[in-house]
Amino acid sequence: MTDTTNETSKFEFKAETKQLLDILVHSLYTNREIFLRELISNASDALDKLRFQSNKGTEIADSDLDLEIKIDFDSEKNTITVQDTGIGMTRDEIIANIGTIAKSGSADFLQQLQENKEDANNIIGKFGVGFYSVFMVADKVTIKTKSFQQEAKAIQWESDGLGTYEIIEIEEPKKRGTEIIIHLKEDTKDYAEKYRLETIIKKHSNFISFPIKVKEDQINTVSALWREPKSNVKKEQYDEFYKFLSYDTDEPFETIHVSVDAPIQFSCILFIPKKDMDLFGFNRDNYGLDLYVRRVLIQHQNKDLLPEYLSFVKGVVDSEDLPLNISRETLQENAIFSKIATSVTNQVLSHLAKLAEKDNDKYNQFWKAHNKVFKLGYSDFTNKEKYEKLLRFNSSKCEGKDDIISFEDYVARMKEDQKEIYYKTGASRESINQDPHLEIFKGKDLEVLYLYDPIDEFAMSSLNKYKDFELKSVDQVDLSSLDKFEFTEEKDKKVEDLSQDDSKHFDSLLAKIKSYLGDKVKEVQESKRLKDSPACLVNPETGMSATMQKIMQQMNKDTSVPQFILEINKDHILIRNMLEVFKKDSNDDYIKNASEQIYESSLLLEGYLVDPHNLVSKINKMLEDSSNWYVASKDK
Ligand code: ADP
Ligand code: MG
Image (cartoon, rainbow, N blue to C red; front, side, top):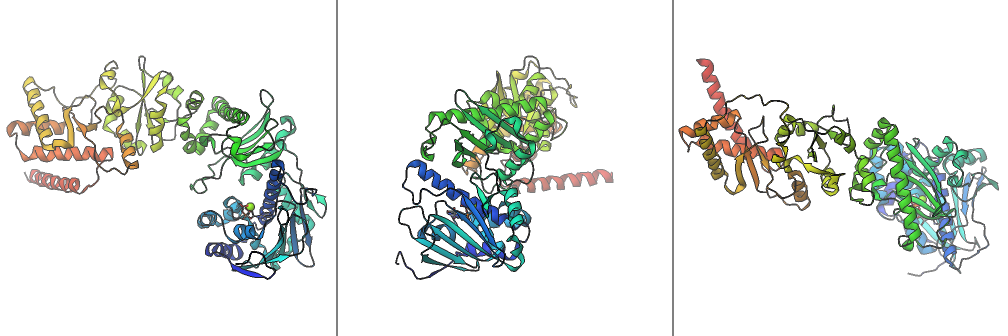
């Protein structure tokens, strides 16, 4: 393959690109104006990259050129031209950047398209495929570009967006930069008009930090909004800036604008969106704050200014105190940068704390929108105190599943003498409500936090304590520690206490059950926690709650069933009846069947029953028996 040639070479788009182009050309008709935003955004990126090289001291072709974006149009020829003096592209770069799609951008985008076509062209820029949006309005696109590298050749790229593109070396332009000539389709030629273009630029590209000129008139404001004193900025300006940054069509939920002068100077505008912007979990990397040094963009979507659990925050940070030529690689080791990051994180956390204090309802809205990500913060030990105050939970004392409380609320109404905060993880409020482990807590009116997310379990064991109160999963609590709390709701006993004799028989029954279950259980013992259920499984002191143990096992693809302790409720009617049978014939088959059944039902409740067949066939057998008895009793 020859590297330079002034003959035309023809290339085919990759299959994925073709598929994407096909959709863009044939099925997206709303909001096609965003093609201009995407081309301007690329021009601005190219200018940023050039400035970055220049700050680093790299030799640059045509260093006298102004850094700007020029838009021109010809309503006779039906063309629009977008030109920049940015970094440009070499022949290899244009093949790599425009001919093929980097990363998995188009696959993700195509998937999003399936979800919602209306939204798709609004968000196309987020997927690294923005350039192609030009084919929504063009039936031919010509790119002329010359790289900033000394002695680079000018290159022309041309395509009708249908399947192939052509590249040829050209004489013009003589100067560095890129020019994109859009040949408009019949039904989009009215874009080639000054007012129309200006309106689109104002709407979508007003905050681009390079001048955008339409036929020599500058359209955008190019002011760094974050450098303005707060009192000068109107709500509309913040909202507009937010929409520009986030691609959100909604207003921001909260806006934080601060300027700090000492010990380190920085200004920032941070936004909390109303909704989680990544509901489907696509595009996980699409977060971070834009970092500026003295109004020069150093890094788009910097991911170290805020911890990941605050990654729903959008915005910009600008500092006077960082060196302009700082490289992205060394940022993290820079002490000033770290201090800025710490301070930015604090700004967000204290803003949330203030919000929680003054407007609980609004804070709860925040929680509903962003808790999934926010909960990842359990490992931020530096900010533990601030962080844990912001957590919210559903609990046994809440009205319903949407009612939430803080640790502080819990502590304020906990029992005198209570040293622990109790929690239980489960699939839903209903399932936790019915969990046998909870019976004693209900009986003693002890509040239990209800957690529904697997991550909650990690969060709780990692936080370990709130203030002086230990966080304890209910199936891990040492029951003797509950003795000091009275039963508020007297156990409405259906049965008499066991006689001394029967107590002995009961102990033998437990031993019998153990002999049937063998190694499946560690021990079978009398339960102190149960009220309504016949039995439950508890963890021998592994220090890990049953749910946590389950999560760990799932992570390790371990399907084995751990050895639990089986606790038996001696006041339950079923157990009393078993005892009667046992006293008459200690080897009655009924005891064996019932023991196995009780064990497997308990496993099922804990989420450990892998194969339900055995359980179901036993239930069916028992139903069959009981139906016979029932019919017989009716016949009497
Ligand atoms: P993204 O901007 O998210 O990378 P695009 O599809 O918009 O995705 O652009 C693809 C790539 O093409 C860019 O990353 C860049 O390398 C290159 N490119 C596009 N426009 C220009 C331009 N005006 N100047 C230099 N390079 C450009
Ligand atoms: Mg782009």
